[in-house]
Length: 125
Image (cartoon, rainbow, N blue to C red):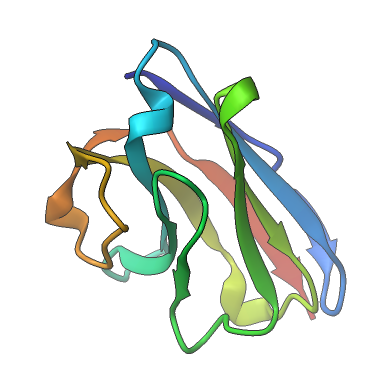
């Protein structure tokens, strides 16, 4: 699975962005997907995950209620809708596909084998 993330950019605090991650290959619908982020000088952290079917999602406490993960298996795409953005959301955002087929998702980056190149989100105050 190859992943291509897009949609990042510069936005003012309180604004919105939608990130997209398009996957190549025929197995996208079997993989749980996740979004992670890494701010400058900090370690990569979990943001959100969605099960292979899209039936279940899970979020980091810091983004709950503001960010929404979704997927369209017909389009091989996973999304991250980002609302009410804060300066502390500034980071490079990465999408990732889980190792195990038909998984419910994971907060642990070690459970993901395939990573996109990242897209930069900058939130100004």
